[in-house]
Image (cartoon, rainbow over all chains, first blue to last red; front, side):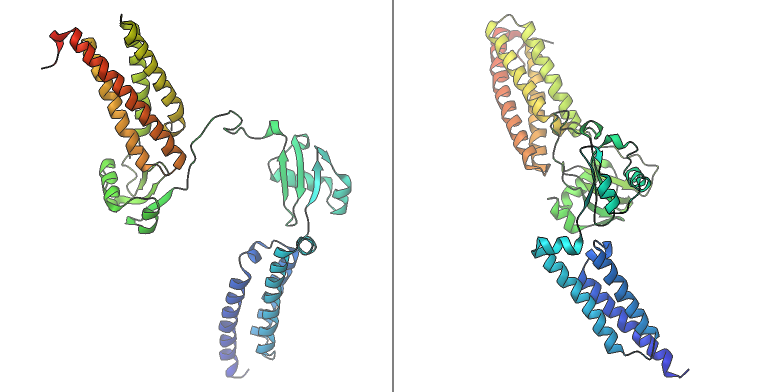
Length: 288
Length: 68
């Protein structure tokens, strides 16, 4: 072995780390999840070429770079063409195969994809389905995952099924991390430091003691402390207002029963009605 | 407690609720929630007005209990 060999290997390694890094940046996240067979294969090939050129000192660096670039750029090109043309997309990325339709297993499609009944069962179980009869529709995705649509009666209950209105919730912003304030999320949630200081004072904690602090779309601050022995009170303002509303409504009912004046009776009744209306409208936002 | 005092108490509770609702309207991120809050605040406003009139009537009826 010559003296220059280790140096050459070090040089090649770093060079190809750089090239592979750039290629993966260009090709993007899609390659990592290996959406299609083509991307899967090209990913492996690029890796093998790099390994071959780094350790095989007799092979030419520029050839290696060239072939990696070709594979990388082809992947990008295929992605772009697939974006434009549905036909091309079907060929390159493949289409899903329907395994269960209208609750009936499609034996022909199963055979076409060479899946046995056991394998179908195993795929279904992975989706927490143990009874084929519960399934309305199932399709084998090009990635090899099975997507399952359960029959309506077997799907989890949602607020929509119960005809409940619920408040829209936005993503909570993390505004304190490791005892430090994060300015960007703080601004994004429409708050400032003065507000944060007041809220922390309300909770009775110092910012140094806060490991993680989040503000939700109701503008309420919840914190996790380093000191787990301290109990942090949970925000009570919304349920409190709800309770007050209900109390006032009951009071007005009482007044309307208690008074002898016909006009006052009517007035109390009307206002108690208004409060009931307000309670109904506010309950999605003030409960929980 | 006289009737007037009871109604007065209820009125101040309504005022407190209105203040809290306006605070929520500032804090909530959801636009729909804010609209609902403002509508409820308007309702509170109406109730406040009615109760205020009633309190004046009651104080005229039972002037001996009027707060000094």
